[in-house]
Image (cartoon, rainbow, N blue to C red):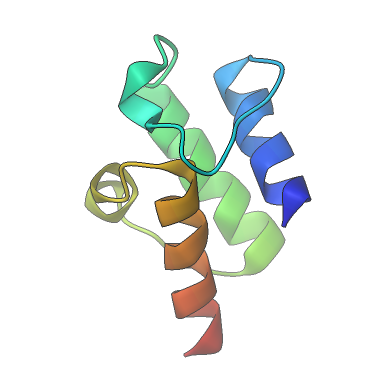
Length: 73
């Protein structure tokens, strides 16, 4: 899932994102970034997320875990 972190880094316009990174700590983490994550996850993983779910994930790992849980269902 390194590709997942690369996609999040691209959305946040940073070089790299690690699983333990708190998304809200990035200045670029705003409503547009949340919408970009929702669109990316829908397009690449065929998983529908709400803005609340994305924001509640807190970390990049939490977001990846959320996508993984919803992919299994």
